[in-house]
Image 1 (cartoon, rainbow, N blue to C red):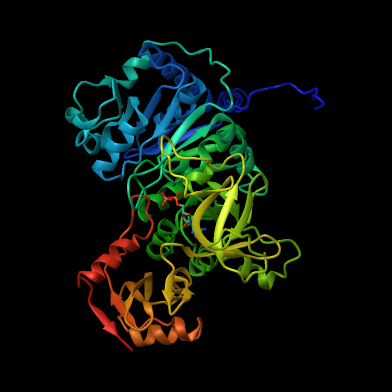
Image 2: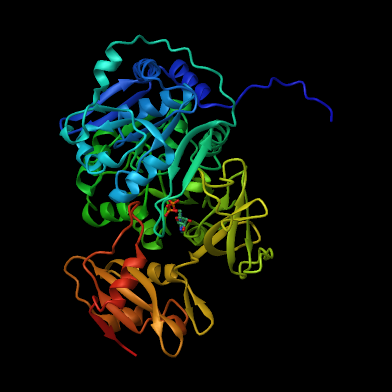
Length: 536
Ligand code: ADP
């Protein structure tokens, strides 16, 4: 092999941190509080991150020590994002919405030694404090009841005892930088461990014009929690390019979000469809004109949402796809060049194309690769330098196939690489040997003005094995009229897809990361807990 002449410079969060702080010293981190915005510059946040690193080192945090965070999106959380990996330790972002038994499981499984805790949510952690076997220190910030946590250290006191100017090491780019557990709708959550290299490459991948097109001229509103797949990578990406970062903490309902947007005027944001739907339905009067785009994913983005945002607010909703295991951004639905503007929407409602850096393919049940013909349906597989190769301390192999990650998502691919996810493998409805896409039915239903949200699940059927049951949350002031909704679908999907069973529900049950929890609906149906109208 011929050696290259290039410097062997390790790819690491250290560089992203030091670059952003030095070159974009005046950029801002704005945390929303009960009393309005609190602003700090990157220079100030950088200094505080140094002090945090020094304080953690004094507590014995060293290479590879796991430091958990239990916090909303705020400046303190960002300080941990910057300091912990840069000092060679591992940032473990804990999902504050996990069920208690899952929360203690992930802290113990990751062997977190120090936890940095937002006092406003300390009671959630207090419930499991006695079960945490590896935690040596708990550091709290902000105000709230921390009495249930036992002895704690005060974040500000620790920082006050240290000076800025921490000497960050150059760590091996393949070593662990951060970790995040999947929400684990079945079984225990699984840990994904990001390396410095994977995070660095993902950061460059998402700032590019192929993805979010981020620059110093942006101001990003981080709605996606920093405890969920690194807030889709936006904290590191925004920091590296000098985009201002607006942190909404727990103010995530339509009312406060609109106030935050109107006051801080972000140019870019990212959120799951539920949050955007909430704004569209409850605050159509909002002024969102500062936003050039909002990236949306985590579940299929309904056409009604993309159209609604465009018509109501003049804001572009960009669909993206990924998962905790993919850092998370893997694909995004930018309209292909030379598309007739009249056809643009037909691309925007699809799942997206792979970012440069990752490869995507679809495979049938036997593991054979399927053609990119827009027709063949198979499981989506993915590989690349920011895709997980295994789970933390978990021998599971069935999620991997010849070096590719099996995503559990089913879909097709167009010749130009656009993927279209039709369902999660476990949610697809198998009727008489054919597949019905629950996602397509939901999207079509959510286009009806009387429907606020719709979840479609497969339920047992004597004749067809499984048939769709449509569960509908009505828009305010609307009547439940299943025959009308069925008629609406008739014009939009194949006849044999039409649900016979209909149920009105108050709310779609959601998982800890805000996805439709169809397992709960299937169980409710099996237990006779749903009022069902049968139109067959
Ligand atoms: P978890 O896997 O813990 O539920 P993730 O955020 O990692 O949480 O979820 C990833 C999954 O979310 C994907 O495998 C896919 O099923 C779904 N998803 C994400 N983005 C989209 C999208 N644009 N369209 C359809 N499904 C999506």
